[in-house]
Amino acid sequence: MLHYRLRWAVISGLLGLLPVGAAAQVATASPGSAFLSPERLIGYTFANDAYFRTDYYFTQGMTGTVVHPALAWLPTHHLLRLGPAKGTEYFGVRVHYDGFTPLRIQDAFIRVGDRPYAAYLYADFFRILNQPTQRLRLTMGLQLGVIGPAAGAKGFQTKLHEWLGAPTPRGWDYQIQNDLILGYSGRLEGQLARVGRAVELIGGATASLSSLRTYASADARLRVGLLDPYFANLGVTSRASRSGQRRVQLYTEMRLEGRAVGYDATLQGGLLRRDNPYALPAQAISRTVALGTGTLGLGYAGVRLETSASWISPEFEGARSHKWTQFSLLVGF
Image (cartoon, rainbow, N blue to C red; front, side, top):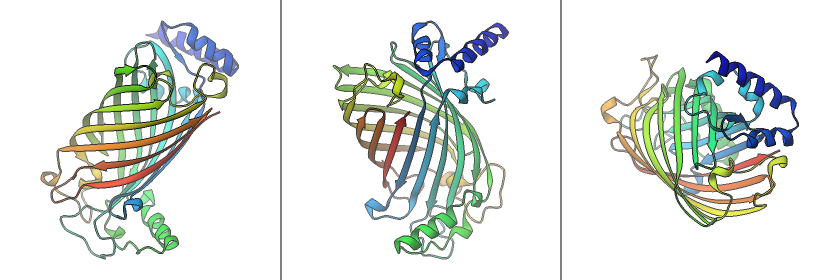
């Protein structure tokens, strides 16, 4: 084990000293081991349910993502290097912010039996091990952050509604209280079928053990259009790695997921505190949930734009299903 760590430290150090193009050649010239990708990517997503003229349940969210070889040196990398040691490694961090409300935000009282107000802000440190020839991808993630008023949702949604002339949310004083988000997740993806370069069917399985959400899920993703193979890269590539990739991508995706839910802090409150003004009891939580997403994507060189619509089945007793839209941008540099 010590020998492997020493060898990895030497290889990583050498890769960090090489130009991007040279590092890419090293990473692809030795297929018997895991090598650090030189890819540098940034991404942003914004989600909201306003397009469907609703303002409840999952009502707004944002993520910011960075993938960079320097992130392999964070202390978290020791916890993320599980599984096989063959393929290309990508290290990144994604910051999540999401807000949730009950059906009527104009009510200045607790709506018993409805969804609690809740918001979270956390960082997801992840490592992706990609195996293009085997058409497999393993993603491990470590989550650290907070759920509760510290996420800032009360001020954010109030100000946003003020700008838009929308009703003022009046129940954030009853939100899930500040609590720790700490979790670990793993996701395995593999190609199930492929027709030429225009159609792919990808299967996936996810397990999450977290103080935010604990669940297991299985999903299938159908991709159709002018696109690079799913396991060729992370959607876009840095400038030095674009040889042989499609310059223009235009595609659509359909994704279906079934989830078995063990715990959800946005409904039940965090694990460390029991003084929430209001939370749903465990027996009110739906233990099986279905999710669906349709996406339209456009890529050019190192830029990818996507717009998607998502649907989720009722998450608790007496709940409605819900829909929202998301816009995302991913850039390789």
